[in-house]
Image 1 (cartoon, helix red, strand yellow):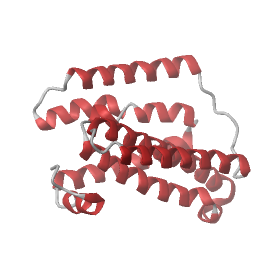
Image 2: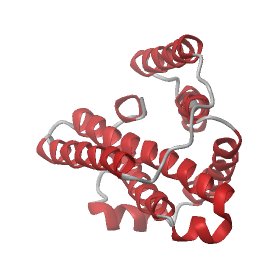
Image 3: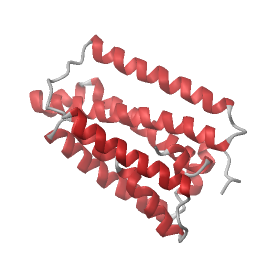
Length: 201
């Protein structure tokens, strides 16, 4: 409900909802499959397939709420599905080369964090426009989940090369936890602010 205020109030409300808890359980299962897919294949193939969740989220939400999706939502789903299909066919992704944990990777992660901060600040400035606020929160969540995928791939690479100890002392492992927690919390805020079509694409 819109009466719930703040992130603490929102989480307190959500943890009392059995359907939300079921959703988080399914999200945890999905994360395990996501990690398995990233361990087995290139990130350029896995991530577009993961993003295709939007294609299923809108009709699933419509079925649960017993309400047909709006034209705007259907248009967003169709554009997303088409864009993902074109990307996969046109990019012809390959396995690529292992990434290092050096300055280049750290700089890339730092740029992503700057984008997150800028989008979060913009979301705070457009509080009176729920759809725009949800859009910028969606940008924050999307970038954080992108970081999760990248950090997870790096952590699994460390696992392959040096075993559990190498993975547990590598900084990307802890990046997964931080970015993942931030992404989940931001997504919940975005969903609370406006419809899926505003934030999820």
